Figure 1 (cartoon, helix red, strand yellow):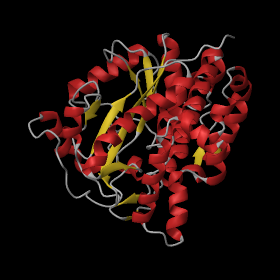
Figure 2 (cartoon, rainbow, N blue to C red; figure 1 turned 180 degrees about the vertical axis):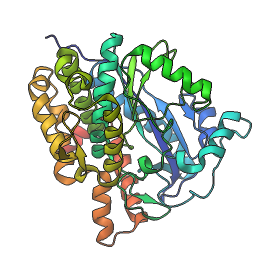
Figure 3 (cartoon, helix red, strand yellow; figure 1 turned 135 degrees about the vertical axis):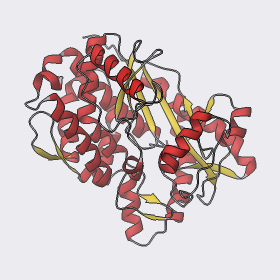
Length: 380
């Protein structure tokens, strides 16, 4: 097999705030000066979208350059970028509208309030074959909990712990509440049309689930899958490692769909698989890498950490063939030392305050934005 990578793009949601870690909304002002950023319904967070790339060598700078430009805009205003995926220090009791005249924003505020005021990473992988796209969608849906387990970074809300490693995924209003494991494109189209007709979805984008089809004319014209479950991963190398694992899983399916498509392989029905996957997502939100999950192949119990280890072993030959072993390597550190939420909670249990942890995270985010050639020279 030739080294044919998939086209990859990211949607990155970020919080802005003070150097003390408090959320401060400036999205509208940012948009006026930096049009590459997208405004969210609440102005305390905003989003940028990377230009799709095939090769990993280009992706780090694509992820960091917009952050660097935004940070330069924020600095004279004594503001910064914040780690974490929820309103860690406070503010969840109020919604701060970015556009009071926008009727869709009014709907979001009325229906969901600050449950939607979160930061996350959405990973898009391009796929041309519509049949294989839906097979990949099924596989990623059944393994989405593992990517949440690797990325969990929101154990705090309003200045205290919540008992969850991903408070973001716990609070986010999944819509519609029950999403099937799509059998094919026709099934997806008919299902979306019915949700729109019933008013469950307000528009074609109002499908908020762990992973969904994406494209220029949903539900009819789609060309990629979008993994939406990940909390904010600020470290670009860790994000690229998570992306590489996701891509390798999809490439494995493209090579051997009969071995990796849950619809063809699993001993569990499609309806039960959808429910099993949703429950796995909930468990991963609670305990991330330590979560006990049910495997999609036969339902047996396995911890997220052990399952990820199994996946790494499975993709090893392909990773070697694709020269992705170094790109994958940060996952070993996450498995050994814990994700962001687990590290924060360990320090919190030792008496470190949420405020102090956020300050440390702000410093880490700043250091991550040094151009790679500069950081390599500094380290070497």
